[in-house]
Image (cartoon, rainbow, N blue to C red; front, side, top):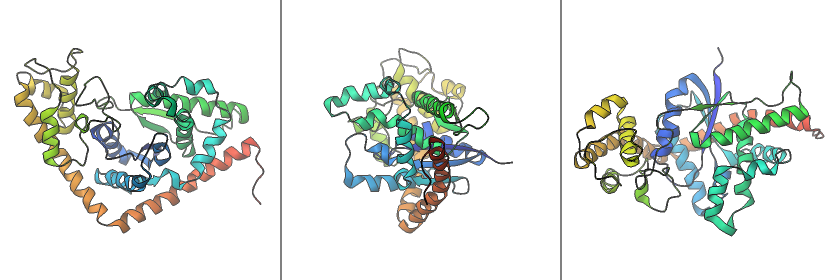
Length: 336
């Protein structure tokens, strides 16, 4: 029986953090035997905001190494670099030409980031949901693993695909497959260590707001020691007045592999002075093997080159076939 295909990617804008790991990568690892996975480094998306061109290539390779170190297996997954496959940018332009501007202007993440960037906001930032749609639709996935905050973008992808199918295809012969979201309930939205009401983010200027997957044991201990808490003794899930408490307990639950009920019982009578060392121990135990495997991979650059070259060849075959279907439907003259 043929496996269903899934597709996902992460921007290579620095070391990946617990939000990336618990909200995305670990989910990919857990379900990889059930699906045919296509996982990429979204380097074209990484330049929609100011970036360091000297770091982009290294960051891209580092993210690929992190995928592998976290447990992604090549017998189940194809790992590739977005910019290595020109079909992403080419399909994005075609989708631009059928996507109404007001669909993009109402996207929540654009509104939030545009406020931060002011006059420096780029057309690319407005338009990146269309590129994201091209990323997804090129590989005709059955499902797309997304967090709750990305669900709006997948809905836009579905709307764009349906619009193209309606205008240029038929009900019996749609041009593009319409993917469905695959949403992980627990850990889909890991919050900042500095503010439990905000998502953990690589763009936060404070390093203390996040734990990177590759942080040293000492750095992990320091960040947890300094993370924001509250004055209430006794720890509990789900209290809206205690967002940091809920976030830190959730991290312990996910990293330790325990149930919410078990963690609630274990920590109910704890103070922060007892809990923080426990969370530190749990985090180090979960991340140390990943960090060690990551350095092994980077110390063998030829292996990583082979992974990315093979991934490009496999992904490009599918992407180019989809692009050809779209170009034919839109009426482009075939190459001779």
